[in-house]
Image (cartoon, rainbow, N blue to C red; front, side, top):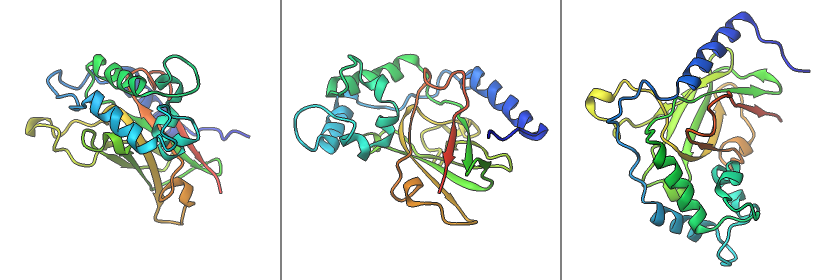
Length: 212
């Protein structure tokens, strides 16, 4: 049974919807894009994940990269069920073509269908983007809602340090709690991943539904 939302949660949902629908309109246009070299990053991805060295990435191989796996259909441009180096490079260029350098990101975290309060959520760039994209984090409120922000603000100028958002990319998602130990599949051995891009979460607020 779906849990009903109380008035406070509905207020947070409304705020989140406005943030999502507004996209990055509050981000000045001179915020630098992550300086991703699409060709180099895609080569690194193949080196990391193409374990059978056949020149394509299968879903099974991408269990090691849950961020790509989460966006598999968008990376798999020709729809053949496999991802090639040029498709990874193409997807990166699609992020860059939007011109958006920061994305306002809001999500909910549930534990056994209930909001998980005070959970720490981290977005860790997949290995092939580690040289270009900064990690982000946030803590859930009493409604299980989290707004992610850069852990290290060094990609931003001094006059931009108050901006909030996450850079476009693919991330491993790690969720922990100080109240109790969550299963390793949600943190140290995470199976959670996300592709964060302007064309992905324009009209929905995703929820991480965790179970025992």
